[in-house]
Length: 251
Image (tube, rainbow, N blue to C red; front, top):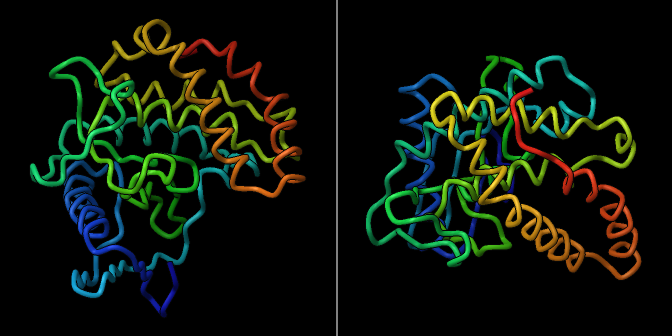
């Protein structure tokens, strides 16, 4: 990805970028209709050369940065992120040829799977200082899954952000990083449309949450040098007990 004036340019495999373009374009319309979030406009997509260009928004602050500096608007933004994700899961529909499923363990019961964001994490959720809007970026799926995954259990997106809220804590904030409260704010927004998710997260999906946390941490550790991976794993070893004890709720 590169910045060219007022443009954010991504280059890559044309088929993968076509999926991201389709998701981002539809999400732009969904956000416009519901008023809960904004997605940067697509300026250009060249399928032959594998170039996808978005408008550049110059006043974005990531959710992670807001949490690190204890921004008073954080919990309101997290609740809105939950509301926005619930709408995305209801409204996002891609063509049949762009339906790529999650691994089997992340698929839900028949009739409960949805088209997903795929990388709903703190660096892709932003606050636009100039407009006061929630902005959702990067509609390709997380590298851990491969960039083309588009379809699976709604709980993937939900758990992915909840995991991020725990393992994404900056080191200087480790002991005053209230991940449970942040996760609850997010869930309260989603639960306004789907209140049954709290019970499902506490029961059916709790073991999967823990297992996927460990899988995510190992994946990220492998992207580092041996020394940095050891430091990272030690840091995560201190964080994990709080995540393992977390009981999804709204208080």
